[in-house]
Length: 191
Length: 224
Image (cartoon, rainbow over all chains, first blue to last red; front, side, top):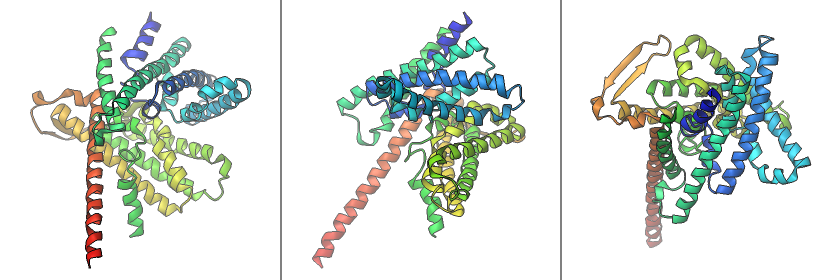
């Protein structure tokens, strides 16, 4: 039951982009069409899940027993960067189709604060192993959901071509995001 | 004069928020109150200055192929130090900034300045560039937080992060006329979008006037 509440809260109620303000750069950057948004979302789900698993293991199996907790930030960012690099090489060599689909989004993900954010929050929230697994998969799902929704709106908006000059581009994107965030506040009653 | 130019360029022409659109996560998240905005601004500026100077000092001995991992380690070490200092001396502020304090590591603006400026210029110029970019960051986050806090609560308060006591609390208009939306997450997106549009409009108007002036200047020259 608690795990279900955790899923609902991290996908809808405190959505990573709209409520927690993480991952704004890819959110604004790769939302111009739905196909790219979906690709970025899939890459994010994959990378967030596995890098959280790796960093959680590193923290509780290596850093905590050795009393090196202060190295968490430094080691997490290195793990994430190395993992993304490794995945990229692995895909390129063994699953070229997947590499073609996700390839260009993978390097961008290293600087996606969702990845490091989730890895750090797994520790600071004191999650158990199962909570960590659920949290690290539902947060990027929430990210993908909002990214795809937003890209659909943005496609329409661009094809209308009626946006006033100064509002074009990021300004209108931010205002649309505000409306989306307003709609998502109504999920607050779910829990 | 040329040195002043570097600072001003970093602050206005390359303004991280409104021109380069980098590091928007922390801008949006930490601008709900004036106090947290100032805290975040100062933390980012400190990290920027130290990383830029260190990266510039070692730029000649850093192998080109592994420069990005080297930058990341330096930035992460610097952020860890700032985070420890803030947890020790300004615990309440560190709690308010929460996960965004360690996330300064992935703030694109720091990596961007390391790559674009510090790895190619001498330490003093890199220091000035970091100072300019940092001041530009503080300017944007503080402007956004002022608008949000005043419109959202009708008052402006500042908490001293070291003693956690209120330094001032000015009521600008009665709180029943405030729009609480602006203090919430929706307001952050809305206000940043509106500010960006305003700045775009001003930039467009200024460049249009400049173009007009130039167009007017050419015929008179021809007439003479």
